[in-house]
Length: 349
Picture 1 (cartoon, rainbow, N blue to C red):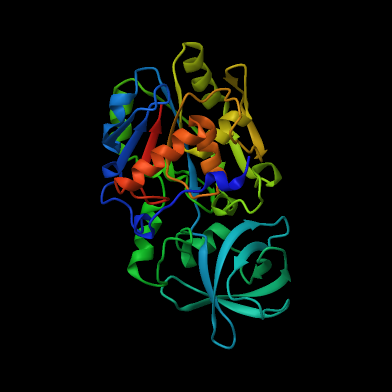
Picture 2 (picture 1 turned 30 degrees about the vertical axis):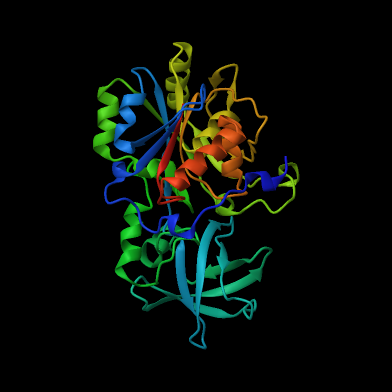
């Protein structure tokens, strides 16, 4: 499939820069795959479309405050994004404006108020703008980032450093059920749920199962190749517990729907599914779902609107049909839905 088939026109002003005032106030475009019918609703209307016994699958990964700043000895400021800790305790990071850095040079972390904190040493330059560095502290990365980090918002959401707004993003760029730290991007379809809505669903008899997929930086990268087949899919860590597998399998055996909240849940479920069952497992998945894929377990999908030429749009097109999805996107643009991470949602039935 040609990558340019995943293009669509989007006015820049429809890229959401802030979340809805209340999570379930986001708009919800409901797409019925059977006949292509579209409905314009709000996310708080979701319970009307779910039935008792349906299994709603959530990704409980917790986003690290992975965006940080440090200062060179010259006074110049560098922005970084924590990716992962290596076995020897070094940090693998992305750095901006770091062309003149050299291994062995030292920088100083800045805390959330822009004050100098601990120092660090640059160890090695890697590929694709990545670096290895070693902080001069024995604290684990999560503890350090809780002191210096801010929400790792995608590049299309613009935020100044060291102001109140980024602190608010720490709460809103996170699902209310996040509990397992490890992601450097949010599973954004889950951002629309609040506790009362989840309680309302449970009271209706909707079963809720949680799995974990730690979203990586590759989720934002557009496909650069001419065809999807040439693209190398990024790998992400996942885990699905025996309890979650049991909940999902019980619903499937009863003929109930498995409703994935977000593309991350789809990738995880489809990685471990066979013969309408999922198995408990943990590991890395590089599953690339694109048009032509046969879904094994997912019956319905809640998802945000995705970037053109992205693997996420390819997955959504595989689930609903390319022309159906592009037609829905054109309607969303016409009706001025809000797009991307802080934007509105779709329910694909």
